[in-house]
Length: 158
Ligand SMILES: Nc1ncnc2c1ncn2[C@@H]1O[C@H](COP(=O)(O)OP(=O)(O)O)[C@@H](O)[C@H]1O
Ligand SMILES: [Mg+2]
Image (tube, rainbow, N blue to C red; front, side, top):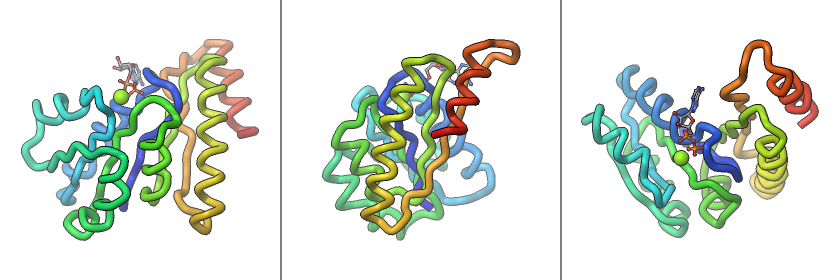
């Protein structure tokens, strides 16, 4: 299974969720390859600190497209941490992932960014016969926050 963490905005939790997902899968004794597709490479540093069993790859846009299948043959799961922005890299992830998660925080800017990412996801699904499946992941919500409540309402419509 190839999982991608994408959104057009930074700071929404892509890297945090990607690293936790990879650690979760590795703890289940699955063979995990982590593709760090963010030039900032914060996930690489983080994984390097705690895991020796997760194989790390730093791939650029073309490499994601050309090497995803080859790497998938070598792992149970692949987790791709995407960069901020609906860049060519994000599009490449949409072309190769089976599942994408779109983290979204409780702010209007986050919601606008997520809306753009959802549109891109739908474009990819049209070309790829429904793939990748996508899930919006409300993140950093506050239990009694008005913005958090509004965000969840708006997310339902997306
Ligand atoms: N659920 C959460 N609760 C609190 N802080 C979070 C949560 N998810 C992410 N963060 C924090 O938000 C910041 C941005 O997260 P990060 O995963 O780096 O986002 P991105 O990769 O989308 O830029 C980090 O400081 C991270 O620790
Ligand atoms: Mg990140």
